[in-house]
Length: 267
Image 1 (tube, one colour):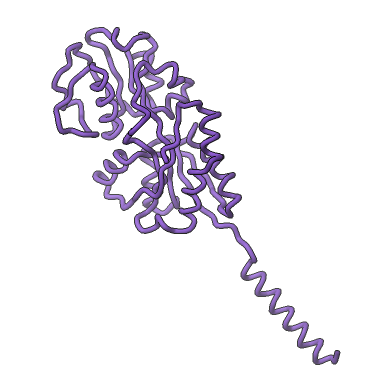
Image 2 (cartoon, helix red, strand yellow; image 1 turned 90 degrees about the vertical axis):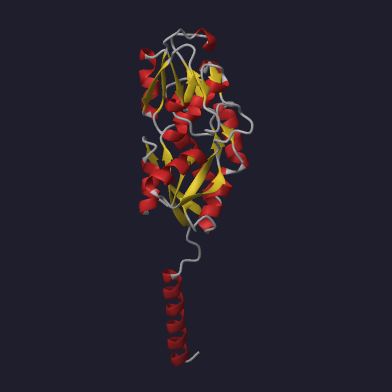
């Protein structure tokens, strides 16, 4: 081989190596996912492991306040979040104008009524002090649960978003305390009972299967959680991979083993 050929070969090899450095053969997709800390964060860690096998690197960002993940997603600080159901998102959109849409179902956590003072829902006394979440969707969810179990009656046609102003019959004259959902477990000893979201109940070491005096139906439940993204991004390959990871057999098996029916697949 001539010196000219050697120089040509060296130059060509250098160009190939430079191109390889600039365009890696395989770079994992990356995504930033917002969740609520606790059991949903624990679930997201399983999702992260499943997604990694599909070339998706998930950075999990945990929040303690329901109002923050949608704000972060809308700002562009997150690529997706996974913590909410449709009634909650609808109320957030109505109040804040977010352009956020569901991309695929994840889990459903039937909400329940808890008490440390009473063992039977029907034994709640007249004038009982009842805590409910103060956000419109979960507050409405709590009132519907209490109405479904005969404690109160609600005005017809209010659907999933009744308020305390829609209570038309209250034979035990219970008094409602609308509190931040995350604070209800801490306030439970000072109340006669409270409707608590399952993620906060679990974080407070309450077992929904044993400790909830009444609970939402586990079938045809309208409060399935989902992966949420900015409108128009629901078909992006990284989002499709994220939803696929959430809806995997590995996640279903984890839910069955870890939560034993307290948290269920929603897909």
